[in-house]
Image 1 (cartoon, helix red, strand yellow):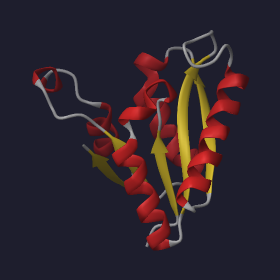
Image 2 (cartoon, helix red, strand yellow; image 1 turned 180 degrees about the vertical axis):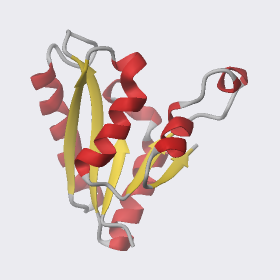
Image 3 (spheres, one colour; image 1 turned 60 degrees about the vertical axis):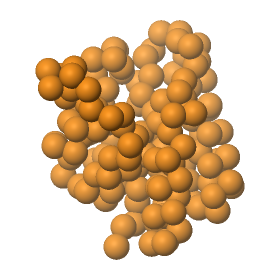
Length: 137
């Protein structure tokens, strides 16, 4: 059913992604799909990496570790943005196309008051992606 699953990850907050990563891994094993972990970074130094190359290396290490831990084919796709905070949703939507994903599995939070004013990343991706999106809370 699914061949390639995209999982957006924030390497600064990996501990909040466990349910989404487990769900993606389970689906990958069930359907024999590969998983591509997508991370968005700035070209300037940040809390995770000093530059985009270092970020890409850390994301690749993360993908290898997830693949080994869950017994799945996994890879990384790093995206560099001028402002990841404001450009995250468009960057992720472009990554869906660039990676050839046919399913996006992404973590989200329980909706709050601000989500009625500013949509969540999961809601935006689900509303605009041309592929299926599974938002995991």
